[in-house]
Amino acid sequence: MRHIFLDHQSATPLLPEAFEAMKPFFGEAFGSPSSLHQHGLRAREAVGKARAQLALFLNAQSPEEIIFTSSGAEAANLAVKGVAFASLRRGNHIVLSTIEHPAVAGAIEFLERNGFTCTRVGVDARGVINPDDIRAALTDKTILICAHLANHDIGTIQPIREIADIANERGVAVYVDAAAGAGWLPIDVTADGVSLLSFSVHRLGGPKGCGVLYRNRRARLENLIHGGIQEGGKRAGTENVPSIVGAGVAAEIVQQRMPVRIAHVSGLQKRLWNRLEKEIDFIQLNGPELGPSRVCNNLNVSAEFVEGEGQLLSLDVAGIAVASGTSCVSKAVKVSPVLAAIGVEHSLALGSVILTLGADNTEEEMDDAAESFARVTSKLRGMSPLWEEFQAGKTQSSIQQNTRV
Image 1 (cartoon, rainbow, N blue to C red):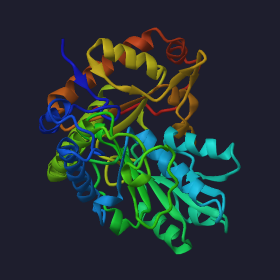
Image 2: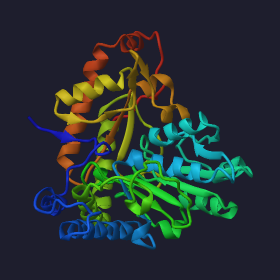
Image 3: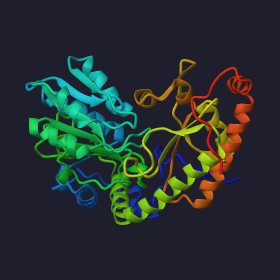
Image 4: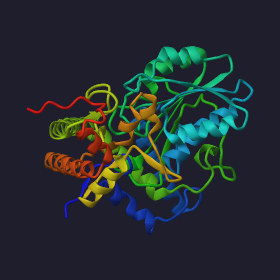
């Protein structure tokens, strides 16, 4: 049975070079980086090399500005809560968009329950944050602005440099969640002037179990995990040496191959969407059009008159892995907050599916995936009361019927 993986935002295959570099640190090179003997020195040097590789990947001014965590979620929490707790004397107000990743939004909600205030800035129909809205939301108590490089749901690329310029004018820290953009968009923390930035290496060919947080040396940050001096005193606990080593190698390789990766996957993205649009009636692309406003590996599509989770499960049976924009909570179907924020109609949001492509995908896989998607959609519509009502003329479509060539 074929297996076509189109859920690269959840995980990516571990690069062979990263795996090979990791192997010694599962075996003979098992020492702790904090130990003073030769076993500790070998581990410490390996972590230092990875730190330098990640600093180069982000164009940080120093490897010491890189903090390793256990995941992207932990890195996001450390950035948001760490800045907040370290800045209490200055203020307690935070600004973010309405479409931030749950790791960021959840950290903010925790802070709101503990005395902080927050302003959530809306986005346009493409999911773009207006920097002027960020500026208008600032107060003399604002200590942090949270934004994201590319949206995890609809792939929108945000105007990070403009947002950072506003933050720097006011002396406010700016944190960027780069989890959905790292590896697919060039990142230059120095040129962009961001205070903090985080991502997960398992989304760009690295191993799970390693998050990366860039922290400008001028950014104040309170540590959340206590009891050790690791990571410059900002993240206590013995480092995950194998994963950190793999993270450094993966970042270096992806940096070298990025232009080729982007060109290849951009072509696949266009090919897949063109096939879906041609073969399926009543389907729409959610978020910005393909091009400079959208990260090259993301498609978020809604096929009307079906639910996204049904499509996901049916496609999985057919050997194609995708993600759904809906989730079941307490037996109720919950649509993506991102789609709600950009004004996607509820019925279409229920039918959203997220396809994220990878460097190893092929044109043949795009064609096969489109054919399977069309077949699954047709089958599910055949069982849908909404489709039956539409066919009988009792209800209308929210999407204009596609014109077939």
